[in-house]
Amino acid sequence: MSEQQSSGWSTEITELYENLGRELWAIFYAHCNDADRAYDALQEAFLKLHIHQGEPIRETRAWLLRVGKNWLTDIARKRQSSEKHAEYLDELDSQQEGPAELMERSELQEQVRKGLDELNEEHRQILILRYALNWSSIKIAETLELKTSTVDMRLSRARKRLATILKRAGMEP
Image (cartoon, rainbow, N blue to C red; front, side, top):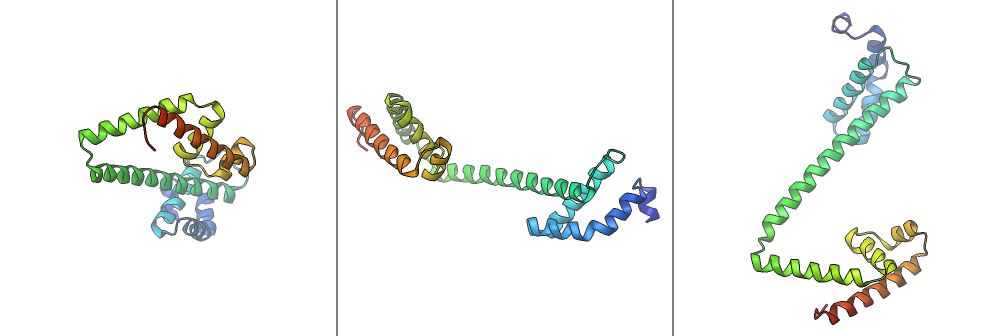
């Protein structure tokens, strides 16, 4: 304990660590299922407590929990993001599209964009939410404050209308 005090930790923080450390670590471990990461979250929480020493903190335990969980969430988000980028790059490598395929896909995308521009706002919006954002009918219904059956009906009509527009432009679905 005197070693910690000489390194700048107050007696109060040292006592909190001794009293809450095990419990907080267990909660962080349950959150991330990784002992090392749970320990890192615990250290991060107490480091922030040390930095904010002297500032009013109403519920110290709750504050430490929030700091640790936020840190774990940030780490998970960063890790997930970097994994997505790696997967995307791997996917691009595996596709190995040549110039002809890239040009064809680009032309197809342009035709679909033009077709979407010809749709009314209601149809365009519902197709973009469903296919560009990959939203479910339920999520679309909640967002637009519609019934799910209404969303499904509009999706069906919008797809038919877009297919008609694309056929007229010389594209076969």
